[in-house]
Length: 375
Image (tube, rainbow, N blue to C red; front, side, top):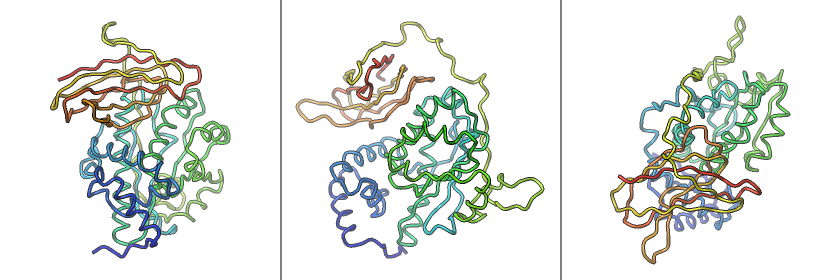
């Protein structure tokens, strides 16, 4: 039996208004008062900003089957290299679950040189959906809004050119994706085991993060983080691999260690025929499109390589009716180390417009090599 929800009258009125504005896209699973309230709080009740972003998220949920994703096994190839970290309730911070991220030892560089970035992202979405489901279950049981304490363990982090590339590219994009699609799910990002060069890292990463994400970051003291983190969560929620050999076991959660990737398994470039791709160039501040006619029931498949960041989506057009999103808008970090590949099942006959944006760039002309096929 669900508990009585602790939501004010004014907030409930806003939730109902938002629900009415997205009712055509909203699924029964995602349609909870607390889910919609997160979007309102994350965007300061700005409906003009919320509605298009929420509709894009709901399209993502439909196309990627996110409502049922957490029902399936955690068996993506990426998962053993980026282990799950959701443990239990904090026990000290009210209405808060704990997630442990092995940020210092996760082989992000290896993952991005082995798997397409969208495959890495989908593997990560599985864990985000598990977190969301855990939060939703607690909200239904207690009637109170819940969130996640996201603990980032930086032990083993190395300061090199690869780290800078990751901070300015894939990791900032994944962080932005979390902020955009899992609005207000995170209570705080808590950094532990911070290295001596943390101030340098933070000076690079901070400007690249969304403002609300920046404001949630807490960096614990280098010598005091063990005692500080135990003021935020009980031992049962914190990983046992933090225990020092020969000392008292302060931390009790069983969290698996991630496995690094053998560089021998990295994606091999230049193994395709020279004419496999078609190239387009998109000027700084501009957008480019590729139109493909397809029939209902056909499948569109694509591969892209780029020499820089870009935003991507697929729009559908038919006759005089307004165009609609057929594939959600995603920000893709570049240059791509492994081709971005995906597919779309056509739900109607018409023109599918592949849209690429280089609007963020001031000077760089974006070069994209693409191959799009129909089945």
